[in-house]
Amino acid sequence: MANEKKINYVILGLLNHEPLTGYEIKKRIDHSLKFFWSGSFGSIYPALEALEADGCVEKEEESSGRGKIIYSITEKGRALLREWLVKPAEKDELRYETLLKLFFGRELGREGILDHIQKFEEKIRNELLILEGYAANLEKVQDEEEHKYYLLTVRFGIETYRAYLAWCEEAKAVLQKD
Amino acid sequence: MANEKKINYVILGLLNHEPLTGYEIKKRIDHSLKFFWSGSFGSIYPALEALEADGCVEKEEESSGRGKIIYSITEKGRALLREWLVKPAEKDELRYETLLKLFFGRELGREGILDHIQKFEEKIRNELLILEGYAANLEKVQDEEEHKYYLLTVRFGIETYRAYLAWCEEAKAVLQKD
DNA sequence: TTGGGCATGTAAATGGTTACATGATTTC
DNA sequence: GAAATCATGTAACCATTTACATGCCCAA
Image (cartoon, rainbow over the protein chains, first blue to last red):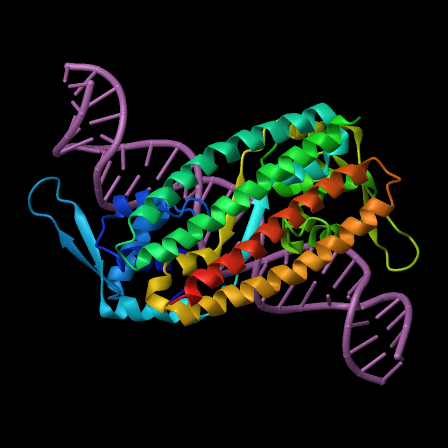
């Protein structure tokens, strides 16, 4: 029921693997999902509250220590997650400011565009290293069924980034031959 | 000056090439920028008004016919565009619901995930054909300096999509061997 | 003559981020 | 004992989309 906020499914999907605090959910998003998704505290905490009111997640307040609030998924939540999972993906969106600047590149000129490509390349190179690290780990530790799927998303990132880097070389070559 | 709405720069960038109506701007976005950017009438028309009030664009109302409003860029607008172009890109964002579902794939299972990959592959295959058509055209007609930059963005799309398709094959193979 | 594309616009809702506030705990 | 990180939360803002309203022009 309810609305279409994707953050709800992100949360349910993560909790379906293990109980987590809001803070930990944010960390999972920033590390494991970073390549293809994002989410802020400002959306996570309210969503957790709404999901709990809906009976899709349960909270358990730690009595000792810092009093962390640990959420876990309920049967109802799992059903909602499944319902969403079977539906076709409705939006695969790429929004690259770098490409926008490149498209209007004539006004900026060759040098400026080469700068943008340079920065883009560096960023991608760094992120590729991280992804390759993830992949190496996941290939080593294949103890959970989940890992197969995690690895597939990481492989997607790796192959995409390698294509980006190949394009960078091509683009630099095109621009440098006057 | 003013705000950071990217739609402003999209409009200025397009108008920097040729005068256009709001409707035509929308078409350019949906065709030429589609792969890496989007924008709706609900953002274009108000932005045009604001840009005009700011003196960044000028409008000319067609007296005959339908009374179209044709916008062109001013020197001030071009300066604003340039100012933005030199700044480093701040956000290159990819948000793929397909990958999100894939990440949580264990709950859906092999068959369901293969369906998602299948649909994704078909969509990419279609869009790749379109991009290859663009590239062929741009390679043939190299009469404007702009074309070099347009072609680079198209090449980016083509190489990315080819990597996606290669990944699809790999993913299907991984999932099909039990 | 009717349906599709051209053309302009607006109001409301959306889904989200940013920035802030607060404080506990761990680590150097 | 200072700094970094853990941890929860909220209010204000944000760019943008969606859905709607309106009407013209052209081709089959």
